[in-house]
Length: 168
Image 1 (cartoon, rainbow, N blue to C red):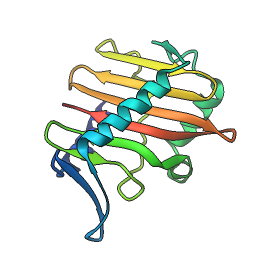
Image 2 (tube, rainbow, N blue to C red; image 1 turned 90 degrees about the vertical axis):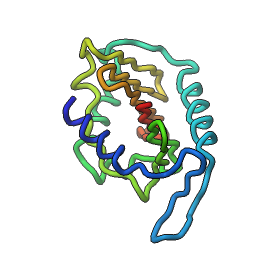
Image 3 (cartoon, rainbow, N blue to C red; image 1 turned 120 degrees about the vertical axis):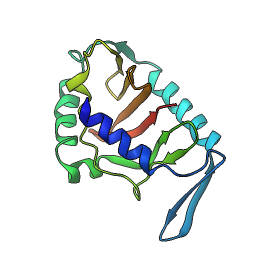
Image 4 (cartoon, rainbow, N blue to C red; image 1 turned 60 degrees about the vertical axis):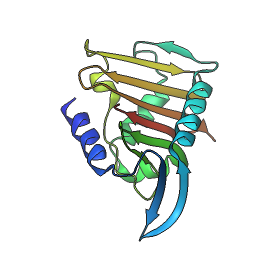
C-alpha cells in the first residue's frame, strides 16, 4: 500500500498540464495533442468494452493461472513489461486540475502488484475477466483514487492496453 501511494504521488507531482488541452512533448516539440475530455471519453469507452462479456468478481482466486504467471513477471522484469505494453495504450493520470496522458515517452516501470493488497477491507477491488481480457479496478477509499488496469490476450500473450489513475 505504501509503495502504491509513493508511485501515485510521483505521478501526481509530475502532472503539470492544464485540464483544457494536453500536449505531449518530447525535447520541446509537440508530438501529439488532445483535448482532456477526449481522452477520458476514450478511456470510458475502453472500460465499457472490457466489461462486456466478462465476469466480475471480488476475489483473485479465480484469475486465470496464465495471467497470474504473466503478471508476476510483468511487475518484476522491466524489459518484459515494456515488451508487453501496447503503447497505443489508452492511459492517463487524472487529478482535479490536470491530466497526464501516458505514452512510451513518459512510461515508468510499474512494479505495483495489485494482488498483494487486494483484500484490504478499506478498499473496494474487482476483477472482470474472460479468456481474452482482464480489467482490474482498485478503489482506494482512504486516499480517494481509482486505479484501473486492462490487459488483453493477443497472439497468445497478455498486453497492458489500458491504465488509469484518477484521484479527483
